[in-house]
Image (cartoon, rainbow, N blue to C red; front, side, top):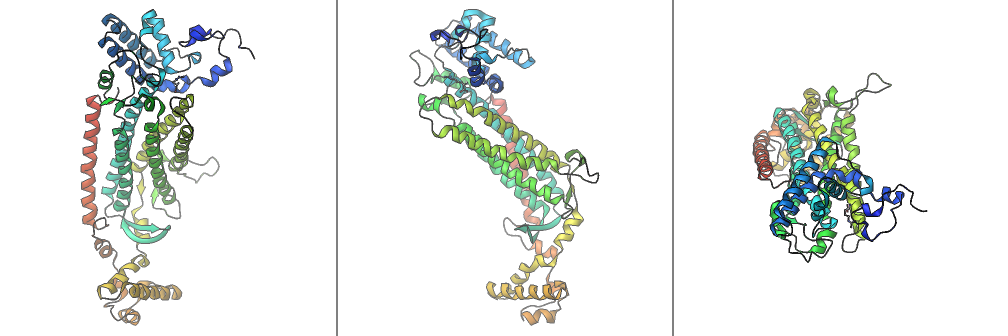
Length: 484
Ligand code: ARG
């Protein structure tokens, strides 16, 4: 099939020189990435300005040319910000769209910007700058959610609920302790982001298509200008690798799984069966058919969206797995999954923070559920252990007690001192006296336990950690280590 007339002549494309036929429109549509990589415009311009300054510094272009290029790039940044930039799919990607616009504004001098540069090191640079930014932004989102959880935890030190294993009531805990558990997981996600960001410390610019350049470029200059520690060490690795994107997506997938588990609890807890919480009207929706329904759609969607983050990670892993060195156009397939993950996590963090901040906690329902004396069965066994009964025997004795009350359908607390002694003589009182919810919680005062002192100490510790992290993020933003 011959290309349709009216299609752009190849000479209008920056790479058109060796071509004599126009690109087939279907190929143009198929290979264009501008409809998604326009998201990188800000970072692309940031990298191009550093490139222009570097070229001026080494004398490959004149100071007047540097000035013209910077002015043109700033003008384009404004056009993009105000929405007047004419994005054109025939120009494939964000790099060629910007370069072509620069030519329209400045004429032939625009052609000097790409000196010693390839789109291969350019896209690697754009992505590195983008990832540095979004990983910090994601860390902020995680910080905000942890802040909300911390606040709600503080309000709920005295709120007691059953802790679960196998979704069966296990032992009583403070709601503060429960939410602190989620803060721990989300805190590790933030720390993973920080670790991954520390590896985005080398500047790709100057790696060229794959083997550097014969021109006297100053890669240190570009690296410093863009806030990297140094230029990358191997030009082939630089244009071929995307593990910085993989790492972000892996952390994001882990974090979405964590949010999904938190979301799942909100879904369960807002059911009539649990009745532990009620989502605010602003964070739930109704049924179009059943007027009585109030549905936990927000946590459900978060739970559902975790699949995207997992899928996006698998997509990029799969794109990369068979690629020989160095750059291959397959790599263009990195962007949509990456962008989707960034947006999915950003939105999920935001709505989860809102849902939890506005959540109505049904303290009475939680306490009622936790008042089930069966939850203190382990405590009974440990009472025997203190009287030097081997734990396995103690477990057996208490198992028989539980079996007895379950068969007789009586309350464990109704067993008298004599009843208890009929199971083991080391019991020094009736069950009612031995079993006390408050005492049970307070005796779990080991490190990591749910006793009030422990929980309060951890709340303070985390508050200090969050405020240190907030200062660290703000300092990074202020230092310009992150592209603006
Ligand atoms: N749009 C391309 C990408 O996302 C930019 C690099 C293109 N390089 C090339 N040689 N065609 O990977």
